[in-house]
Amino acid sequence: MRVLVVGNGAREHAISVSLAQDPGVTALACAPGNAGTAAVAESPGLDVADNDAVVALARSWQADLVVIGPEGPLVNGAADAVRAAGFACFGPGREAARIEGSKAFAKAVMSAAGVPTASSVVVDNPAHLETALGVFTPPYVVKDDSLAAGKGVVVSPDLEVARAHALSLLDAGHPALLESFLDGPEVSLFCLVDGDTVVPLLPAQDFKRVGDDDTGPNTGGMGAYAPLPWAGDDLAADLVERIVRPVAAELVNRGTPFSGLLYAGLAMTSQGPAVIEFNCRFGDPETQAVLALLRTPLAGLLHATATGTLADHPPLEWADGSAVTVVVAAEGYPATPRLGDVVTGADAAGVLHAGTRRRDDGAVVSSGGRVLSVVGTGADLAAARVDAYARLEPIRLAGSHQRTDIALKAERGEIRVPDATG
Image: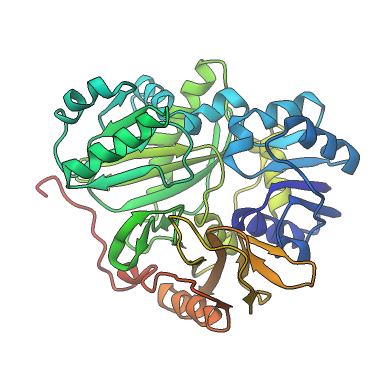
């Protein structure tokens, strides 16, 4: 099978590494890719925002399967264009991808499906903001209703901070979504979805705040781990039945069935699981940890999802143990990252590239805010943490930063799901 992966981040590097290890893959390309993907896949140039260019590349490269990684092309309808050209494509069409592209749309789908989520109000006019803010109590949650790469969210006990963020979104022409705060630890559940068929992957947890102990602003994600030692073995199956399958069924009912990876971001609250958000693609950095433990060949799994045969696929196989991902970020991230600095030590096993490119002189340099994802594995979470942070030690990038506490509370047994009494 000739597989074309569209994208250039650590998620696409992780997908490419898994595909490169699959004996069923005879040729692999990652477009446009980065300095890391180039080691395992061809790297043809591509403007991922140009649907015609994606189709043209699939045709010229003679792809048997196209895997679209980022949310932007999916919300832009790239999967529709690829399928219309006759290629098998892993990724939802434009209408189904609205589950991520519009938080208001996602709320409507969840309401129709009877799925628990935070109460919310969409504000599209500054004149209505004060009334809307008055509906909620601290901590305040304010989100960009459109795509924001994980950085359009503010959670703060300070009303002034919430108001300022909402006004900044409105000034930019983006509706602001105000939500009630959901207590409890978060869970990221990836599910392969083919219409009504839902197959969960291992539950994971990511870390959105830039600093240790969940301090500082939200980011696209500073690390992740899988599986969850504090959750029961039946968690994934329970969340599929209560959350994911009803949403998948509602999308079928609306005539826009989902095909691809449906990512449920959940809070395990005192009242039970509730949805924080849905995404229409593999999450980053959780993918890096989850795929490190997957033993089922990835190409056949993605192809079955893309061609409507997921229900016939054998059960998934997983490695024992745990995986931990730690993100290395550029100086200034998540605000304005410094770019163009030389990165060394990033060609080792377990190091996945996100924001990198290869300079004309052969040096690897930073090209984005999140530069690398370093993945460690081990017999348990403690061993995986040791492995991940050991793999970080040889890496050098001027001014870079990373969290030192990824998965630490889980390792120590300090994560608890709140009960109904608080």
